[in-house]
Image (cartoon, one colour):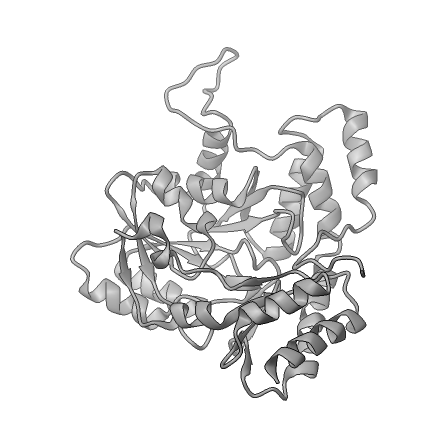
Length: 368
């Protein structure tokens, strides 16, 4: 059997071990050091974000953003329902209430129309929105930012999956009050685990730094007036990130090329629809996602598993999860329909066109 093809396998640049070696030579193994600073700088330079803070995970970054914005027990926080639970967990950490908004068909991301309708008609005004840029594809972010501004709602962009994606030439994660990136093992850029919090507001990122380092006061001894967290990224992982950032554009272009290969081999099958890309946007196509109108995606998954290829259903919407059965939601059925029909297919940047052709041959056989 051929070597397994994963959804999105880590892909090293070649300089990771070199930079890790320099970290070991310096003996700055802890959550501080030269490469933490370099990694934050590389994210600022690439995305245009004014301030960046390297953290232990994307979820930690969202948690800090909510804490900085004063989200507390009983507050309502809007969120994309079509997402991974890591986007939502931090709302629970603050004992706040998630309110889920459905997707639109044009982007599969949160619907600006439904968002505006909910805010116009809700009995209780939400404090913030956590918007997910799904599968590396930009939401209609300018409209969403305008809606949030109109209604006085803070905007946190969960760009965990969308590093390298842009809307009108501006990077996802840089439109809101906060942006969040993830460097988990399956992301387009990985440090094995980690995240980044970005914001145009330096005072906020400085406060996030304070909370991420146990809220220690400015004394030689340990003085605490507030509680904090152990959320900073280590210098070792940051060294991996610096090396990965050297090839980020290559990875984006390769992900997009893989998507084009899938389209080339499957575009003539009428029942298949690919995740759309909004006009004036560039997605990073982190995962190629598609839906089947008639074929059961479970049949496709089983057939792909038989040739040692990983695939996975689209995210089960948060409002359908048992954990959130009592939460408010504003829906039109879009995300549920996508979940029942959709699949993510292998999109690792080490894949060849022949790999994609082999996968597509299996998909095609399932659709006949």
